[in-house]
Image 1 (cartoon, rainbow, N blue to C red):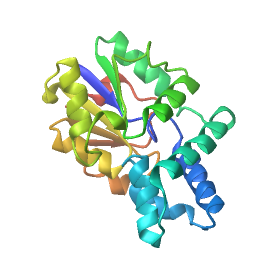
Image 2 (tube, rainbow, N blue to C red):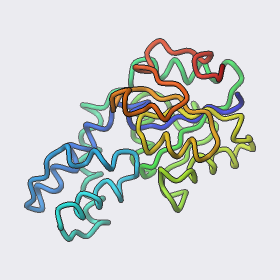
Image 3 (cartoon, rainbow, N blue to C red):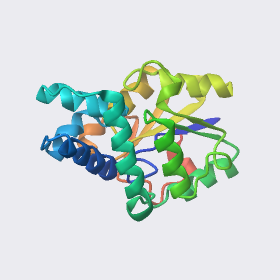
Image 4 (tube, rainbow, N blue to C red):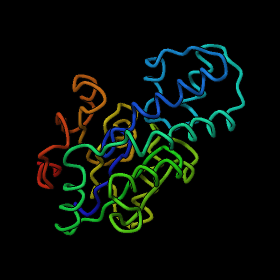
Length: 215
């Protein structure tokens, strides 16, 4: 395979609890007690939908740009103390590159979050990746295939020569719609919910480049 495309939240970084905490706190500041689990259906769809979908669910009217900005302010305060990379993430990215594959991040999150996360775990956007794609770069977020198609197109790689690593159903659907081989890791959702992927592993820990390849 020529290109390995990593989702970020839930694959490289254990950031789902942090953005969840930040969004819950943001809503609390607005006077609404939102259960953390209400955000789960919107994981992997980008922060507009993550925050806006919960507002729709509860019939809350919010100023979405302001709500997202405040959520990011809280999130970025949490990152230095709480954000961790998943075991094996850095080693796997480095091995993919050493084996001659290009590497890309394709995340529905906004660039401010993507760059903060990657810097925090030591996978600097300018050094560890051939391309970093954030949610602002495409019109339609996952489960649309746009973000993965954009990454392949920018790097000149055919979809059938790409592997996507995902942790969420929306991401798996996007990868399959893009015509790419998809490996899922059950780091956010149980493996039973990830069976749409071509292969499912418990985590990135101890995975090698060869584990990502079609058989």
